[in-house]
Image (cartoon, rainbow, N blue to C red; front, side, top):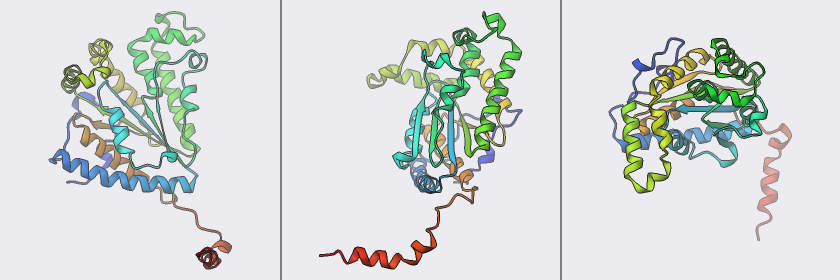
Length: 294
């Protein structure tokens, strides 16, 4: 298999989703893709241990995609070999009453990973320029000064939100959080097949909601909003990667490979050395413990 290069998936300010592939399998079988993912995620798990011991960086992984894009299963499979104490997953739903009493980034800020840990956002602060842009009436529940009706939500409003999001990510990056953003790029036909599967298999019924079909009718609007959001917020300190998601196994492997490749560039992330005094007395410590044998 050709080595996965993160740059092949890096989004630019001129990305066109309609011209970007949604399928990739590298000519490998499902079993081969699974085996390679297992190898990569073991290495990621070891890196996470080192990051935890080093304690000076945090890693934030943002995952976005249309319904059925495979966000949940990707998170489950990519981070399976992580120590539970070193990774926290947050799935953001409709804002609560308390969250609406704060600015829209507040609930994401308080969920950021601590230094030494990975944080995974399943749906992210980008919902505030995606779902709310397709359904601008949702903005009204935020009680923003000067916004009294949908007509008040103009082009300048969204431009300011993009700027605020860029500033938020710049701020956390400057303070030691490594930011990675992944858009799981699904084709409309593959979504149709996955929705049908939820309806055909009884054990999958719980995943289906009639609202999925309503949102599907707005596919083109969502694609346009995703494209603009990615173009305006993919920065060197917080890049977007567009991941072909029609093959779930390939998508998982690509995401894991990009993370491993990019994180290994941080050569200063290493396990701390023992203090000289401790190192000099290691034999004494070992002897003391060995002497306890009955």
